[in-house]
Length: 132
Length: 132
DNA sequence: ATTAGTGTATTACTTACCTAATACACTATA
DNA sequence: TATAGTGTATTAGGTAAGTAATACACTAAT
Image 1 (cartoon, rainbow over the protein chains, first blue to last red):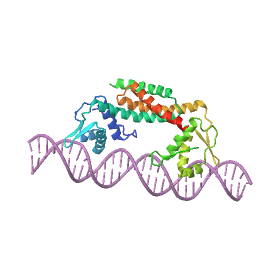
Image 2: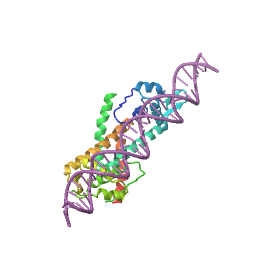
Image 3: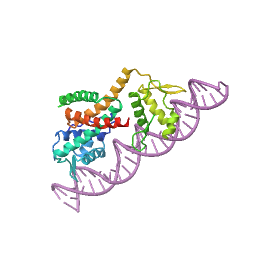
Image 4: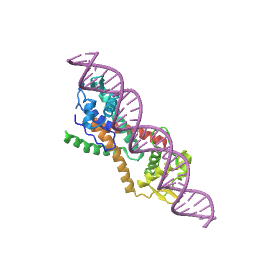
């Protein structure tokens, strides 16, 4: 799996990893039961301490997206689609909530906020498609 | 001006102050040229170090919302409506941008994202009106 | 049992950030 | 020019978070 780490972005490495793996799982880039890259392998590849990888995996496990098998490795969890949608909804809700609060406090109307969202959406959505 | 500080929210005090004063200015709760509460007064009232207040004011000055008059005090800046709209747009853009990226990475459609935004908007918007 | 391969608990280091204490600098006014 | 009222530069202390080093624990296969 392709993983890109920016050591100078200010975003914690384990979060960069989480985000990318989560994305893969959410969009079926990684399939149920599929074995994840070894902690040590990934650590070596990204030139990072194994604990940093382990931390990312642990959080993903807490989210229910990943399963541990002791002494064996980590696997993409067998998540029912319902549950996946639920996780998706929760993550979406938390970020949208923040945005809404900020927008309202700025005195931005609902219409304006939606327009802005559409604009940004289109921007990244096309980029994303190009990459694929 | 009513200011509410939550010492246990994890959100830095100076940011809580910034956000509330900015909101007042953005929504005309504070008028151009109006004198802001003294650093020391506000510090005493909120039971916080004066530097914390000063820090909040400094950032607001950097945003162009506040003006210093040495030895005299701080005042709401005389900001043209254009500029106010520009600041508003920038702040909105940055937060919406984050939300959009997250949503797209979660595989959330534009329609779903907008629905979520509407929902959260209504939630807080009504609360806000009740307070006023 | 031993070995090679897994993940991780514990500990410690570093860094960034927030807050506070203190002393200083500026302005208006008497 | 003295004074009382402004804001703040500088310094220091505290805390939390991210990363890394090390040693340990588990599993499968020999």
